[in-house]
Image 1 (tube, rainbow, N blue to C red):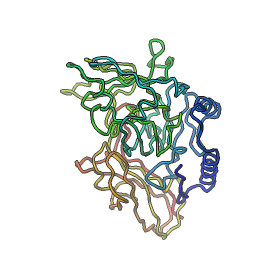
Image 2: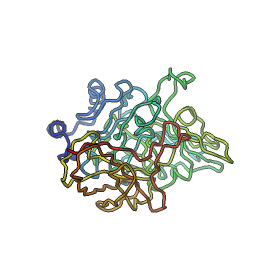
Image 3: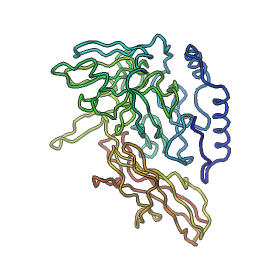
Image 4: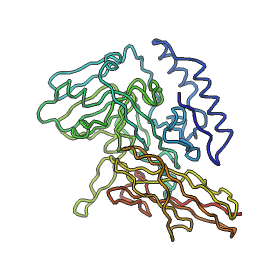
Length: 399
């Protein structure tokens, strides 16, 4: 398993806790094939990973401590956790993936049969559509993520197009519905009309793209139960809501899907001839975040400080990241780190010669991608409480 690197200007206690957690997993060795159901029950009785920030306990929602960002890949035990219902317990030996609907032949694949199909690995940043919601004014409903409703991993599995090709798509098909095993009833507005599963759809054209994967491994390890064991969809470039976990069935349909999680929730207003039309949340918006310094951090006057963070988009390459240390009046260009990886974040740094004048300073970062799109200065109210990608101020103190 990948081990975390020591965070810069971060918490040593968090780092040591993370190391201890990783060592315990390594010491235990791999579980036998029939031990997955026990492993799932044990994890459900002791939810969460060491060092993650608890946003909700029921359902379980855990935030990655973004200030601990140190490398391209997020370790599995630090990857943020998003759930809407209790985590389902699925037996790998009894589980099957079904593909039905407007297909030439219905499929039912066992776990081992799926693992025998040609595999691929894709690196992808997954961001919750509500990440950074806590910064919206006035306060809104929903999980109040700060910066860490986002993480990056390498996902290994079978291309969704491989399954669709085996089933054969019939004429008239327009969308592919991904159905998860997680289910429940929503009792707060917008209430659900009884119990609903978590389901989302992809346009057929998107579903056929090579990067869309049905993943059974995460960073080279079997998919953890919190992240969708035994199988989850990975839809790079789209918000995490599209990457349905605990996948049990795929349905090919001849009309647009209008399920609860596509209309009542995870939908926003898009203007058509000036009039608002409700559309589902899909493509990730261009965004950058500052990992360090953290809010209210004290920095020594006259020092050289390494401002560090990450930027991402919907697959378009990040071409520039800029930093302001005066609340957006002036901007300087940051240095992009590493090589660009489509659908994954780009790390960046800025060497800041801190002023010798003590006082409060406001740092902000903004990204621009290869298509010329730039991170906005304010949140679009038509996006409701989703797609929060405006420049976020980080207030620090120079002493």
